[in-house]
Length: 364
Image: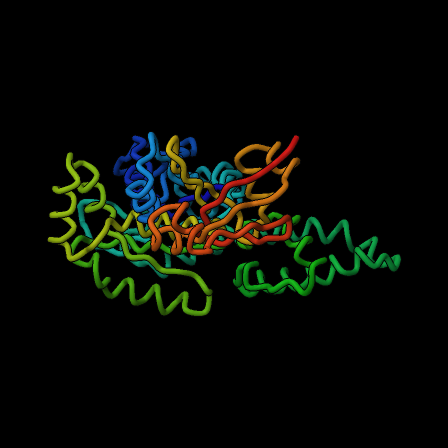
């Protein structure tokens, strides 16, 4: 599962990517400095794993991760191949969610591709290009399905009805994610269309250091614009985050954050938000060899969670032994949680909860 960072050139995408991944994507003050998509495997900050490490004292610790992709800046006309349009659209299609970076700071030394700072215009520029590309996809699909629908084919008629609704929405400059599928059939169809504007999105307002806590007039404009989108807005001073990553010690970083009025780096907030946007959650295994956070889709069953460790665990699943994270921490160990009756044995139907500490019994 990958989240792609998108935005116009020079809004801070590659600098943000560097902060998130510590990979050194080229960052320069001109458009298209990121030609190939850069992929960073980013640890998901989670204080729960620190607490488990403290209690268990394992030999090693493995955090959950999320893949972040830095994608070349998009310009007007991208849907028709302008700039690096075709490449951009291909790269974003392969991502599962979108992190849309908007420039919300003034700085005469950093050129804006359209001449002045206006996050509302910038957002609309990208939205329109993505919507135009989706409209092209929908109309091509409609050409094929219309013939079958006319013959009375029920599946084709269902698909045509959904495509017509999406097309109407796109023509009104509304993204495909505003269409709510009616029933399982439409959900499956919607997934199969692979529309770019159907992907979940969160907005990152890149602000100056002084606006990192409370935002500014540009952030207020963005919040007002997206209030009906059911999308999270995160305030981040990408320049300050870059400075934080350069500091050697944890103590230095904390002092820097305190001076800014922050309790943790904005990058940490963003990573967790991206993880959530991808509909991911975490369960833990905790033993003296290793304490590890495992990533699963929200709604996964116990066998599916076991399969993340090894496919044999899922194939030969017998049962899951589960202690909630809260109970594990309250009683201080697996043994004491068991003594207190907080140890549960669950079968194949069990839906794993975020933070469960688990062992699996299997037989292959």
